[in-house]
Length: 238
Image (cartoon, one colour):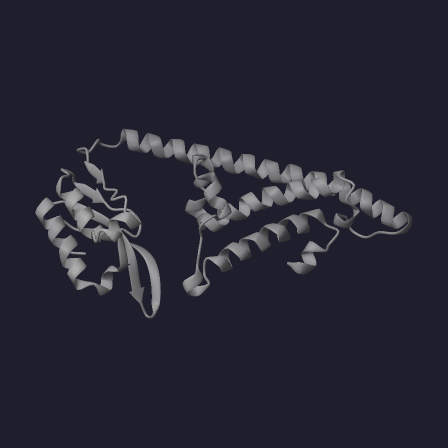
């Protein structure tokens, strides 16, 4: 990647920049207990359903790479247009001038190619989403599923009063009439798989409500802690 960033080939520079961004995001998301994927570039496209379709092929890291490649292509073009000589390859003599002219020309082509690639990806994603919508419309309409999203709005004030956040979620869920009850991320502080009491508590709740449940909580296995979602069946099994 480092040698590609110093090359006089704009295409290699653009790909190397996107690859460097990809490697940084991947390393940041796989660094043990400090793993963090918040703020990854792919999440900036969460409202653009056609672009999001790319994640079905290569995950959100692939989408981040595509977004970074577009930005890298634009940066190559800008380095050719703006009077920032330190961004251009070092050249000298007539041969160097010709090389610089070729760099400027190729930088424009790379930027155009990146834009065309994004248009292709957007078009493919749009068609994929539309075909999926048509298949859903043509399928037999099942009975509606009632979903209850429970938000306990846990605050430090509640903790100061000694109010148990989990008990609050249980109380709020008891008042719901739904086929699926959803608690948010980390609704249960700590690893649910290590808390038998909490497992019985949510299992009995699902049994009483005869509802499926999805609960956000931690999971600890082999010395590693994961931010997980637990699925509880109406019979109380997790």
